[in-house]
Length: 406
Image (cartoon, rainbow, N blue to C red; front, side, top):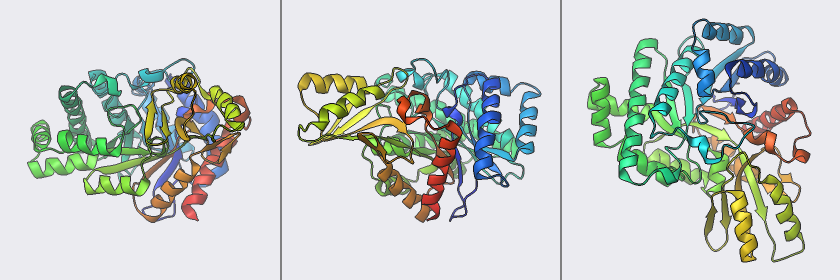
C-alpha cells in the first residue's frame, strides 16, 4: 500500500511468515493469504507484496513462462512487488535453522548469484512506468564468528561491489533501479549502526572501493561513488535495533551523516522481560520464558544491568542465569512478536520502541519501503496465536497505519 504521508512510503508485510520453500508453495500462499489480507485492508487499491523467495523458489520463478504467469497474476489481483526479503537462502520453517540462516553469506559466491537473481526478478516485477525502485534486504555480511579479520571484510566487500555492478548493468538494460540493503542483526558482523558505518566507510565507500567499482562498470569516479551510495544501503529492523539498545533518532542521524542510504525499514517488535528484585513473580516469568526457547530460530539476548550482557541464544541465557543464580533487571530478546501487542502474559513487547521508530518515520522521510515482519508466528507459544493468521496480519498492518497516520 502506498501511504498518504510525507514521502509516500509503501507498506506491506513480509511473506516469510508463511511456510513454503518451493515456488508453487509461495504462489499458493499469496493466493490464500495475501489476497485475503488485501481484501481487508485495500480492497479497491493496489496492495504491495513483500516477497520472500528461497534460492530454490527464485530459480523456478526465473524459468521461461513462469515469471510471465506471475506478472499476470499480480495485475489481475491488484498486487505489486516492491521489495524482496533476500535474507534466508534456504529452508526457513519447520526445522532448526539457527545460525545457518546466514549461510551462504557474503563470503560465498552462492550468495552473490542468489542475490543477482533476486535483483533480476524484482526488476521484472516492479510496476510498469519505472518510477518505483525495488529493494532487497540481505544478511549483514556474515555471522560474526565467520569473520576473522580484515581479509574476510575485504572479501565480503568484493562480492557486494560485484553485486552493485550487476545492479548497474541491470539498470542500464531495463531502466529499473534495485537497491540492496544490509540488515544489521545481533551477533552478526554488522550488529550495530556503528559497525555498519565503519564497514561502509572502510570497504564500500572508500577510495579503493570506488576505484574497484569504476573498473567493474566503466563509470568515472564521481558517477561510481554516486551509484554505490544510491544502490548499497541498510535495512533497519526495529526489533534488532531495540534488542541492541540503539536509539532510533541517533541511529538514523549517524547513518545520514555518514552518507549511508536507509533503503528499507522492517517494522518489528521483540520480546522484553523485566525481572524484579527476587520477587515471587520472577520464577513465573522465568518458567514462562522457557516456552519461547524454540529449536528453530536463533533468539539472541541482550540483558541490561550495569552494562549490556549479550547471549547468543535464549536457551544459553536461561542456562547461565540458572547456574549463576541471578536474573538481569531487563532483557530484550530477538523473537519477533506481534507488534500490536503491548503485553504477552507476564512479558512485554518492545512496542514502545516501535512507536518511537514509527513516529520518526512519520516526521521524516527516512525511507520509502516499510515491511512488517513477524516470521516467528509458527513458533510462538500456542496461547499467543489463536487468532487466524489473516486477521493477525491485517491487525498488525492496521496498527502500523494508525501510528503513521495519527
